[in-house]
Image 1 (cartoon, helix red, strand yellow):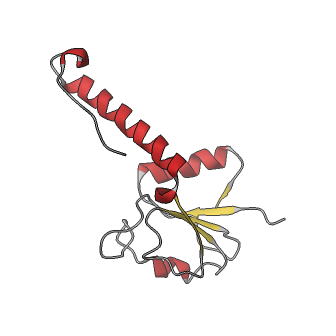
Image 2 (spheres, rainbow, N blue to C red):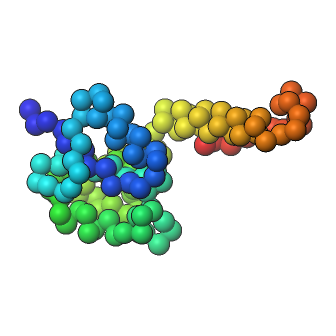
Length: 131
């Protein structure tokens, strides 16, 4: 059995946290492209409207330096990742979306509570949305 080797190229705090979290749980993390990489971790969402990664780089500059049979993990992948790659699109995963929505709502409440001159119980607010 081949040991998974994850190469995180995302630039957000969330991507760095995810890589650290996975490393603590025994997933091997690469700090550079190599033939041994089995998965590529991107930011979520992964792409800007023009097809560039959120970091401003072109995904193909990474893919050409990695094995052709890697899994790409990110969000909104179908439009920008060729079909020949294995994909895990977290923005298509209902469980991921529900967890993300819950975290986002909790953070919104925390920020509001810190900044409002009144308690949340007295604030006429409604939080809606899905992440």
